[in-house]
Image (cartoon, rainbow, N blue to C red; front, side, top):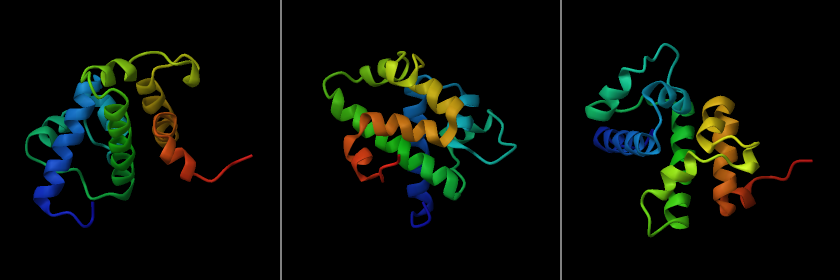
Length: 132
């Protein structure tokens, strides 16, 4: 986000909020998933949706990168049904111990966001170093 103009940052913010809205995340859960700075109230999401860009923060930028990867993977997985991404994000999945992908991202933090992305995007998962 450091290299984006203020207009580009605002457009990115609105796009990310629209994705999270579409998936059905509450404002409070959006604050959590985005790892917005401590003290950010859920009411700030309305301001981000309307006229304010996300803070230029490395942690927020990393979350945005992964959320965009998740949205892109869902778009390519379900190209003919614009509602399937929200359905998938809200359906319990055995891979996540019968939790929904949204629950994983909310409760497990960055590792949960990465786990959801890795599950959906094999090209992302291939580039990650193997762990034992």
